Length: 138
Image (cartoon, rainbow, N blue to C red):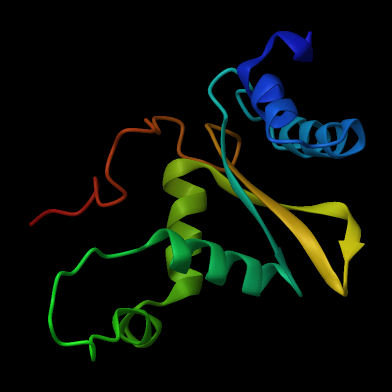
């Protein structure tokens, strides 16, 4: 029963409605996610899915730089250096990430939630602790 799963309890604690939880579980079950190993990552409101992914992960990539020079523009550098589409593709394949658009709209913005876990789209041997570069030979 889904109420016994830690992902269900996490979503309840994070304030998701029963409708949103059902929507999330339907999505996860459609792609054959291993619900016992699926983890909640976070949520964001954005105008569309592309912007939701971009702002969510850009905000997650924060750098603690102690500098007297306030001209360090890390986000601008990341924006120019990272191919965000490829970044997302690797997260989907290697780590089983998903971005789910939830029902309901807040001031012309949609709600999106991010989860990760082994599923039909991720590599069969995906281990959540492995690097996304596990196949690269240096």
